[in-house]
Amino acid sequence: MKISVQNKSILDVDADIIIVNLFEGVKTPGGVTGIIDGAYNSVISNFVIKKEKFTGSFGEIYVLPIVEEGKKIFIAGLGKQADFNYKKIRDLTAKIVRTCKTSPSAKKIVSILHGAGVAGLCPGYCAQMIAEGTISGIYTFDKYKSDKKENTIKEFIIAEIDKDKFQKAKKGVEKGIIVAEAVNRARNLINESSQYLYPETLAEYAVQNSGVKTTVYNKEQIKEMGMNAFLAVGQGSVHEPKFIHMKYKPKNAKKKIAIVGKGITFDAGGLDIKPPSSMLTMRDDMSGAAAVISTIRAISELNPDVEVHAIVAACENMPSGSAYKPGDVIIAKTGRSIEIDNTDAEGRVTLADALAYAEELGVDEIIDIATLTGACMVALGTVASGIMTNNNDKMFEFIKISEKTGERFWPLPMYEEYGDSLKSDIADTKNTGGRMGGASTAGIFLSKFIQKTPWLHLDIAGTAFLEKADSEGIKNATGVGVRSLIEYICN
Ligand code: BES
Ligand code: MN
Ligand code: ZN
Image 1 (cartoon, helix red, strand yellow):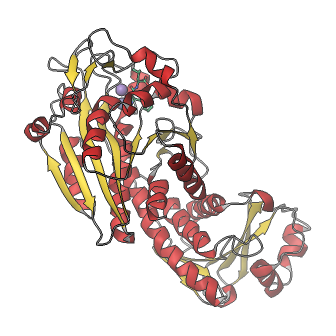
Image 2 (cartoon, helix red, strand yellow):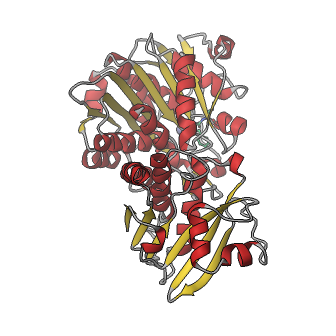
Image 3 (cartoon, protein in one colour):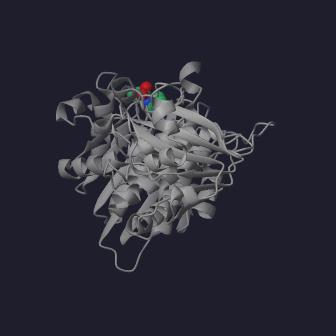
């Protein structure tokens, strides 16, 4: 499928489907929708709005069939103008594409540049959202389905007659394609069966697909680097752990960032084994890893002047005769000792070493992204990810930038009292402190393994994998975090 922008009137683009839009409550369409209305006997104002009572509520789509030989018009509701935003452009486009992608009479679609008219949004970012929505709309994970439904859309065109908006839209589409493909790559990795996706194959994937210089460390090398905490978590699995370091190094970098993704390719809970219902989707416990691998690939294509290190400590958390045990004491890379209180709180134990490794690189900031706690999911549901930090200014900057992408990160507190329950009789810290305030306790635990570098912790336990389709029509792996990380790094 090709996505392009043409510097033409929408009327002059040859297509099977023309997509126009209407804000809620508009009786006389203006802009490009008005032009289409005029070109087809006022069918939108006199029939669709007046007779059919199309209100323009968000996501409402009216199909006008065969306005001329083989041509349909889709009138898409944008909702209330005051509530309109970039994410809605992406959601709407994804919805339209999802309904058209198996229709043989929808090979060529032309769309208005939603948002760039009366709404007054940035034309480049609006176009980016349309490109993202288009690529997200055709996403399915059908690798293991015998009956695959081919996408029949060949071309999606944005028509924009204004020269300046056209130029901006072209750039936006280029970026949108890169971002959306990164998101889909993350989704594919997360949706993949853990039968095939384990540390070795994840590392191999990173080498082939990260787009940057990638070093993979094996068990012996991990041991030499002193990452005993990470090793302990992986020791119960038949699959060897792998430590993956991907580097994007531009010539004149203005800053250095490390992004660290939790990479538990399957979380059975270890000896503190999970009940079946909780274990079922635990192939998603490498969603953070998928996000950082996909992000750095996009970064390698977008070329910002920021040095980026993407880091993944990949292993499986399994119960077995060789598994780490409750009550074990482990000396982490920083020299801090950890008493294992619960083997199912494994992510933070692997991250303890990965964060310490990241800090040794001398970066200006560290962002970790992890499906870390069920407690975060209880607190925020599937609606927002949690964010914690040792640097509030950076956190609010991240939140502000991520809002534009439509991803939500909500601050959870890092009061030092949340660390009280981590006190151990025999070690410097325990790895868990019970259920109450669990997301914050995990955040405090992680903070102990960073000395001074500004750090953001993104808990995506609730948002990484969905049972019900979201507003973009995405079920199962969402690829959450990729869009915000890219936007933050490129900002
Ligand atoms: N991977 C889980 C967290 C998780 C839960 C992710 C639900 C996605 C959906 C993590 O390793 C875990 O098991 N956390 C425990 C910690 C507890 C033992 C303190 C939890 O949240 O129950
Ligand atoms: Mn766990
Ligand atoms: Zn886990």
